[in-house]
Amino acid sequence: MRRNRARRRILLILVMAMLALLFVRSEWMSRWLYPVHYREAIAASADNYELDAHLVAAIIRVESNFKPEAVSSVGAVGIMQLMPDTASWAIKKGGFKDVTVESVSKQPEAGIEVGAWYLNELNEQFEGNMYKVIAAYNAGPRRVNEWLSDGTWDGQLESVDQVPFGETRHYIQRVIYYYNKYMKLYPDIRKS
Image 1 (cartoon, rainbow, N blue to C red):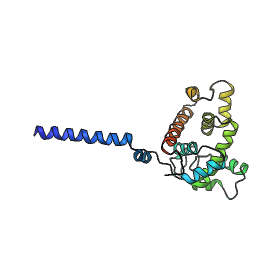
Image 2 (image 1 turned 120 degrees about the horizontal axis):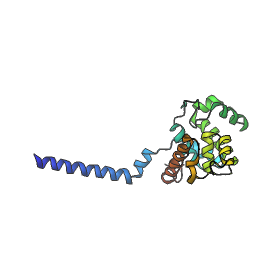
Image 3 (image 1 turned 180 degrees about the horizontal axis):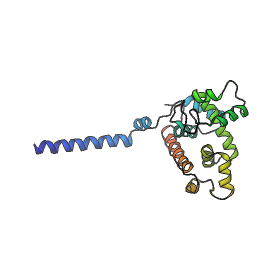
Image 4 (image 1 turned 90 degrees about the vertical axis):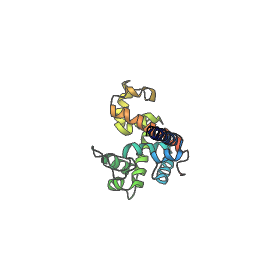
């Protein structure tokens, strides 16, 4: 009886070790855990606005986990979780034809295109500093400019703990985490 229990335990330990090894070393397991949906739309929109597609995918992952009809507790809508006022402004300023706040909130391609346009606006405003852009996407460009001008934060990842909003600090860290994962798992985001 004891011998059977010992064998079962050893077998269980071996199975768990094999599963752990698969989990750690397996690319397919990693891709299963970190999928990127709507790759073509992400790549096309990123190309349209000279953005890194991995950044767009990482923001989508953090904002909505690729759920196009997501609505946040504060009213942000769509796959890239734009506030309706921001989406409306972006649609007008970007000259989008046949795009509405409703289509941004329900159609992934429209949401990705308008969200990428807005990211590009932030990218230009913050001179390509990815950390400032990510912070501004979450907290708004006015707040980020205030933090930068009053010396609260210098716009670098190493000093992200100085960002006064806990939500924004965590947001930057999460986006960068997924950005790095996607860079590693999907060097060319267009391919499977």
